[in-house]
Amino acid sequence: MPSTPPSTLQDVADLSGVSRGTASRALTGSGRVSAETRARVFEAARSLRYSTNSGARNLRRARAGSIGLWLPGGMNFMEYYMNFAVGVVESTKDRELTVSLIPADFPASKAQSLHVDGFVMTDVVSGDELARAILESGRPVVTSELVPLDMPDPTAVVAGDHRGAMSILLKRLRSGGATSIAVIRPPVNQMWVRMAAQAAADWAAASGIPVSFVDLAGVPSAEELHQIIQQLGAQHPDVDAIVCMPEGLGVGILSTLRELGHTVPDDIQLVSYTDSLTLPIVQPPISAMDLRAKDAGVRAGEMLIALIEGGDAYALAAETVEFFDLIYRERSSTRPLRK
Image (tube, rainbow, N blue to C red):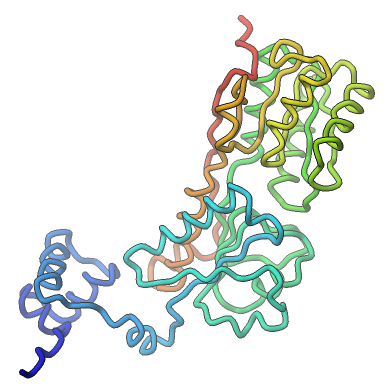
């Protein structure tokens, strides 16, 4: 018995009563097609069991059909980066694009050989040679967060408002009665860290409330964290509020403060600059800033797709910096607002 030949794009166009070009635009999500026409084309494709040949389409367009995702080495296990990656993947939905995670140890000299149409990067680290090679690859690159000044510029940027976010946290601590605040910084040369720290210094100068900085040398063990907080108390005995910038240390700092005989928030208020799943379930739950990692990944992916597809979308996305607001999550580690 002869097999039924597979349906073609022309079959879909004929059944839905549109041109072949309109059917193609409806199925690929490109160009201007009304919602009614798009629905009719999809229904025709479904009834005919038509499936697009993305490989052939990409070959005709000289495209790889994939975007590269670069994450800073040694950090991709963090909740933020996992959520960011999920957002990038979500941005490719119905676009017939795959996402290729680029290993942190991939040779910078071979960056040009990566079979991708463009790149999404987040938290570019100063001096990273692979990141530099990707930024200089000649393909469109969208970064989440600004890149350090010593690195090449990306094509476009989507970034959180870290100056505004830090100001929100410090004002909230002051409204809870803080008179001296410590900011614990991670040991990475990334722009979001520098922007937030500079915002804290500027806020201290404007408000008259002292802000001291504690710079970590790496990811501390429980014993090392105990020593760091103990030393902070010895050097700045008046500190009554702490902002923890590194992801994952908020719970450790809470435990350490208790070990040293402090209560949170009565003695010392505590906020985390990076929210995570553990912070709402400890006692007391820790106030934190939601950096909207998944939203950042979705938007960065959308901007890169616009750059790859060109046209009006390219003009809107190229050489732009798009900032978005971060969200403060109030919990019980900060004292009530003073009237």
